[in-house]
Length: 299
Image (cartoon, rainbow, N blue to C red; front, side, top):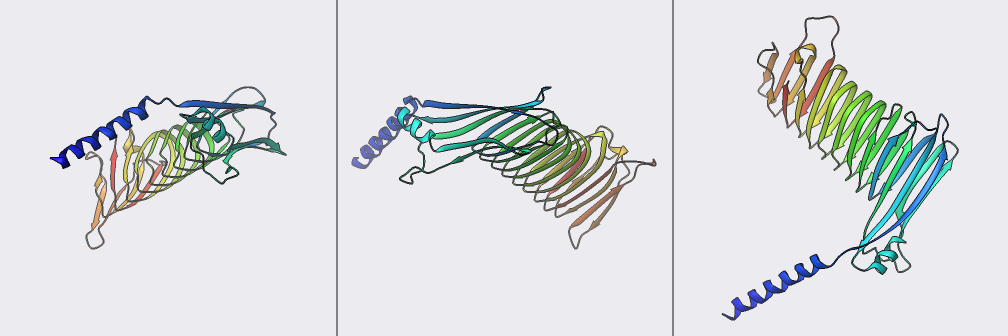
């Protein structure tokens, strides 16, 4: 009986603590920084973020506008203000490079901040301005670039739309969602899901541990994928217009029954090979190699 009462009392204490924590409102402290840079051909925007939300848009002006919001959240406003001072930033031009950076700096006692900290970048730039983004524990939304984009991220979601040119993405533990990529696209991912829609151009992808969805248009030129421990879905409304060279080891392959794919299974090694060539002179090539994963080819 005593034990039951003790357990009930302990449960009430936990419930009360949770209710108190929920009722306690977070105080939000924000510091805003605005910077404007003239733009010339050859300039590059470099962003090095941590706990950063990055939004990059294009406009017609020959200039680069940057708005940085440094944000701290804590039940105690004074604590939030103190912790916000540990979030430092840099926004400057050095020759042809425009550098945007935020980083954490320990206080005099070497204590870590108690507040929830994040930084929000809003960047407006000409469409032909190359961008290099490095980010950790954040997210990025980028649209309408036509020159060069490089992204190196960890634990960060990447969302892209209508990007053309040289595209180089490297992500660990960060999903990629993109629409209307066109050009020369290179992707290296680990423990990240990838969804690419309305694909055009040339792709070279290496992926580990992910669910990979690809939706190709007839303007796809070349597609090369090497995947490990991943589930891969490759879609196109006219699958017979592509040439396929598919290899799956220790996994399953599904493809349309109406296409005359050549299928070969080597049971000793667990490898399944599938090939197909359309009856025309020129066609896009789709090469997919998967280890310990499944492949689905569909419309």
